[in-house]
Image (cartoon, rainbow, N blue to C red; front, side, top):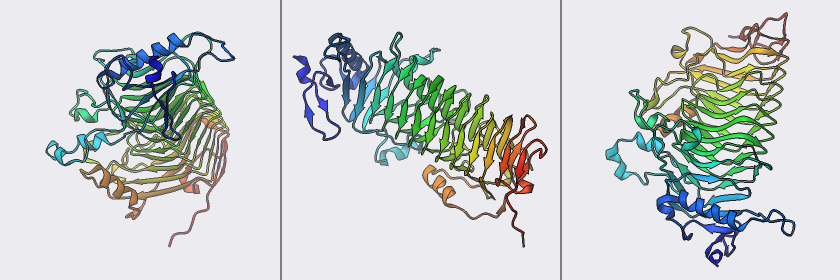
Length: 463
């Protein structure tokens, strides 16, 4: 029986045992995984569907399967189409390494580098996508199923999806720094339940994860960086979580984006700079952004838009500083410093106990001479802003050709030539009946005190 040649990769003990529902892409008799792992995985899925036809056999019938991708490089020239539940695709290493740093090192230095490409269990996206307009066509993995019940319990774990190269965008920017190539790592186009993406690596994809209509989704402990956008939850969804990830989008996209979601938990993520936003919520309600470390080179770090209401934004660390790496100097996200690091359009949100560090060169502030805004309430009512701490420093901006040393030096430098005047909280006329407590001195808060409740942080006398 062919199933006896398949291998069950036991992640608990790394012990192998035969099972008809456990597959190894390197031993499957159809196709060559190194040349086109997409063809191989599609053939395996066809085998699963051919064998698992009973819907109720001994109170079971369709247990699904595990597909194992051993460490190695696997080109994907055929899109993987998944329309079965209970499928787990797993490898033995997320394999992330910075392609951006390598592409911005002079080519004559490449022979001296220890490695040039991401590693681990690495899938290289080689899809022919020129001219495609359907966003699903550029995805390495496309998941969609109609009918009832929704597709459930599809899992991706411990392997790398690598888009390899970005493309020129018509600008003078180096093609490898555009974040544009039409490639997506995982695309989910239909309603789904209890999906898990864990321990994965995503690099050099225009979109790492695009997931529609998610229920009880878990995106946990992944390394998603140097992608145009990292995590996009679209359509609608509920009761999902984005936790413990290392994330960093490009200047064109979002690190974390969600629309029309309820009960979304965004916690303990370390979000790197350069994304147009760290977290952008659009029409999201009764959700939490808590305990994250957020770093950005631009305003608009966290945006609650389109009447996002009854959300908790608490105990996050916001750092806004300036791009120190030469290849990206002068790049922005289109917002000026009056936009706010945290921008709220919605009602009855709680913004409590966050730390904000605004560490910039006063000469770079736009509009010139303005006081940067930290928290801005632009519309809505009943928001509660309390016990937030703002540190603002005017520093002399420097740059370097070394990405790693430039950013580490910038992070570790706390000495400043002077303090920086900021507006800690600004409440626009379209936002009223809010409560602002202990989140800025009397001089740092711009608010209509007849339409909102306000208590200032006591000011310390100078001199």
